[in-house]
Length: 294
Length: 294
Image 1: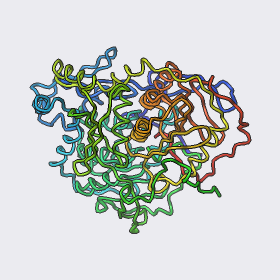
Image 2 (image 1 turned 90 degrees about the horizontal axis):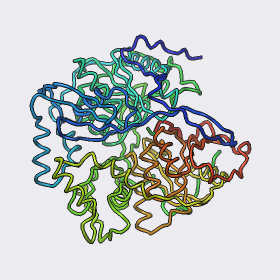
Image 3 (image 1 turned 180 degrees about the horizontal axis):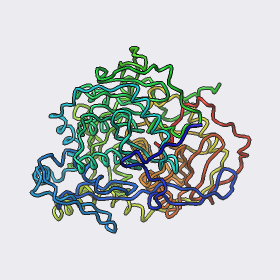
Image 4 (image 1 turned 120 degrees about the vertical axis):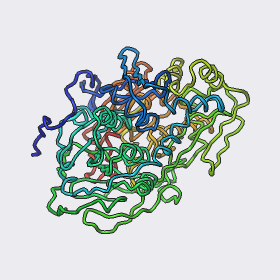
C-alpha cells in the first residue's frame, strides 16, 4: 500500500480540505441511488494591469495575486524592469489589479494596437512568442533518479485531484524535493500561480524542475521557458509544436512519465541517467493519477 | 478483445491516418534507447468576424471553417439572425474570416466597449453568460441503454487519441448512434467544430446527445446549452459551476461515465433507466481511454 506523503515538507502544498475550493453536490448514480460528492469550484477572475483589463480566467480561486502576477509575467506583459507597487484582490468583484510604478510597455503597445486595428484580443499569443526571443536556459544537469523520486512523491501527495478530481496540478521542484504544488481547474493557471510565487519570493529558476499532470503543449512549454526553468516533466503526452519550441529554446522536455517509463524529446543533454528503470516500481493499478489527454 | 468500430457509419469520423494532423518526432526512452513516435500537431488559427480580429485558437487545424463558425456561435458573437455570406480560410496566414451580410451587433458592441474602456478582451466571458438567457432546452428523453451503447462505440472508434494521445474528443450523437466525432488539442475546439458543422448543415439539436472526453466545466456546459443540445455526457468529472449552470438551464449532465458507472448531477428527469448496469461490461484494463482530469 502506498504511503501518504507528509506535506509539511512542501513550502506550499495542496489544501484538499479547504472548504472554499470544493462544493458538495447531490445527484444519482447508475442505479438511480442518491449520491453526494465533492466537486471542485470554478470561479471567474478578471486580471487587470493598472487600468487595463487583460483577461478573465476560470480558476478555483486560491492565490489570486500569484495567478495575476504569474499570468502577466508568463505572457510577456510584465517585465523584470517593471516595478510592482501593489496587487489588489477584490473577492466580491472577482478582480485582481496588478499595479506598476509607471505604465508598462505592454499597455502602451495595446493602446497603439487598439487605435490602429480596433482591438487587440489576438495579440496575446504573438506577445508570448516574442517574449521567448531573449530566453537562455541554464546549462544544468538533472538526474533521472530525482525525476523518479519526484513523480513518486507527487503522486502520493494528498490533493484536490485525489479528493474531487477534474483538476490539474503543477509542482515546482528542486533536486528530488517538491517545493510548491499548485492545482487549478483552468488550463494553465497552476503554472501561472507558481510563476507568481517565484516572482513574489524572488526565487531562482536555474536549479528547478517543473512537473505537471497536463499535456506538453506549446503554451505549457513557452510558460516554462519564460519562467527560466530548464526542465519540464509530465505524466501526459506532447504536441508537435510543444516539442518544436522546447528543441528551439533548449528546454529538457520529458513526457509520458508513468512508473518506470518516460520519453525525452528535447534537451537530452541535461539528463544524467543514474537510475536503473528496471528497479523502479510500476504504478499500482489503483494509482490516483489517471489523466493522459489532459 | 474489443472489436474496432467500422467508422463508415459516422457522418464525420476521426482521421488518425491524416498526415497533416500528426508529426513523427524522435527522442529517447527511459533506457536511453532512440525512439520515434507520432505526436499531434498544434497550430495557431486566428478567427475574424468581418474585419474584427476575435481570437487566436490553438488547433490541430482540421475543419477551420467549422471551428470559426462554431466558436463565434457558441460565444454568442454570431446570432441566428446574422446572414453568413462566406467563410474564408487562409492556410498560409493561419486565419479564418467569417463574413456576414451586415455588421453584427457583437462588432458594434465591441467598438463601443473599445472606445469606452480601451479594449474588450475580458468581455468574451460576459457575452457567453448573456447568450444563455434565452435558452430553453427541449423536453425530450434519453435512454441509459443508448448512453452505454454510445460510450462503448466511441471508445472503440479509431482516433487520433488512440494513435497519438494528448487530444480531446467530442461526439454528436442521436439515440445510440454517434454521428460526428471531432478531436482537437484546444480545450473546446472539438465542441466548437461540431457547432460549426451543425450550423452549416442546419442540423436540429433537439434529439441529440453530446459525448465528450473532457471535463464538465462551466464553459463546456454553456457551449452545449448554446447549441441547444439537451444532454451532455462525459467520462470525466465536474466543476461546481458547470453543475450549477446545467441545473439552472435544465441540461441533463452526466459525468464519470466508465463501464457501468455514471453520475447524473442535473436534468435527471430526462433519463429513462432501461438498462441494467449490472449487465454492462466494465472497461477492459487496457482501455484506450484514460483521461479523467481532462
